[in-house]
Image (cartoon, rainbow, N blue to C red):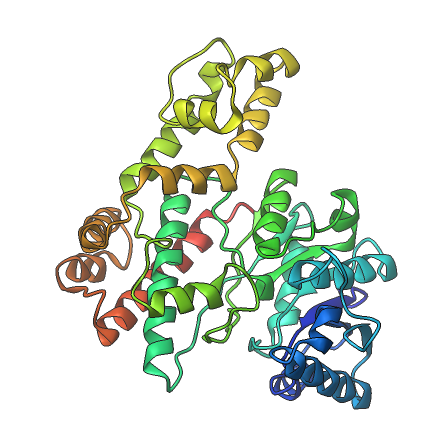
Length: 406
């Protein structure tokens, strides 16, 4: 285990105030055999944009801080200085993350670990050691989607927004865990890892303007078993940010206006439809059957017969079921939920109450707390949101640990 090296992959945009704290956190890690690869980046055109140029200057500060670092091994990929910035469609955090992860994959041996991090995230001192240990004990896993927790701030509006968004995320993850769906991960770029071997074999990370973490973890889930349990959590910052098109920052901004329609509390019954569809895959090998998702898939794929082509191409039941699981992936499940759900603000409290009652009916150490919350939780009250978030987080952690297939 001591021979394993970690490559920390860090995209940076307008983060100079966070870089010193991150470097301090990294110096305190109990596992020190790592190299930091940072891509400081922004579009080239921002140098001529009066509304954006300050972020270019901030990036220059980040580069200087990293250049002066003499205790840690640091490699800087400069996509910020004049003449080096992104041009055309190749830009954004997805491309930055790809550059640093590709660089790590080119430098490391097969057993070395690529750990994706963010500048605004706090990592406990044994985090890197725990990641190395997880991969050492479970050589067949494809990667890790680490547990997370957003600490609150002094900004009440930010606290409300992050709590409400995290409750959306927890509700989704818990329901996906309860139906044993392979795409039950929570996507955070600051909390994922894989080996150099797996990264290279599956073709690396696909650059996206936003959501590159989701697509990467989905790719890892299709490739094999994606681990998602670690007793050490990571702590991303709760802050309003519009640097990407969707994700935590934009969700907080939208939610701060009172609009949570894109992040509803999905009722557990919709996840049962997903489970029912998955349970039908074996029977679909023998011939067409109706599933709760068939019409949706027909419309998505623009095919009258969704399953026949898979039967023609995959001749064993095991291959066919895997093909179905690959087809009905995390993205399609999320699209199905969005299509089927009524995101009306008036229904969110009812959905939450019913979900909490359902969660409490499942034998677990949080059953009584979940039952109590079903009658007391208030989506408009800060202390209630915090209590709800914490209970859902603990329930989710217990499910992650219980259902860990590694």
